[in-house]
Image 1 (cartoon, helix red, strand yellow):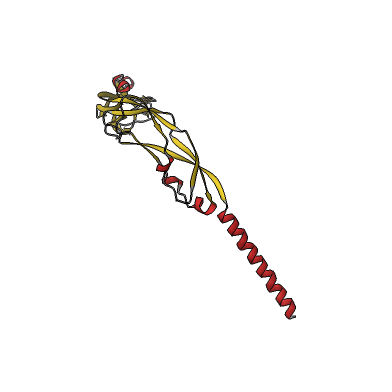
Image 2 (cartoon, one colour):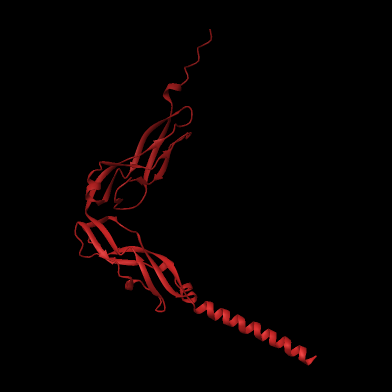
Length: 225
């Protein structure tokens, strides 16, 4: 009976040792893992805007233990490109992976691309009118009256060539189908393609007047004889 108990203890001990060995082997063995690190431009000169770049992220392959790789918070990784001295035109910046903050036990074995190419253009600013974009018809018996926009004009900034081509901007489509009373809607601007944004990023207010259709007024009843 004592011998049987000893055998059971030895079996449990063997399983325990095997489990510890497996955990140590898998916890310390080195593997590779890939990360896409977003590119961030720092110190862009105030008179310039970035209008094009060859990559939005740097892909890195990292070598290290499984345990160390599990501790990497991918959402906090970024690759910063200092562009304080940039001028209009194309600039090339070699990727220096030593600037990516990783635990010391990890090693970056490759990166792509090898350089970041960025195109800079002069910044422009212009005041343009706002035009509301309405879609649909009001309820039966009603017509649209005066349409107002507040503010009537907005300041746009961005790449000079794109900004100066604009004379107006339109709002996102506002559905007026079936409405039977005057109302006010908030709408964002549809700036379309190009590197343009509002100087003050906020919705505009569109006031929509709804009136009875004057063509549907009933004629006075004829007097009975």
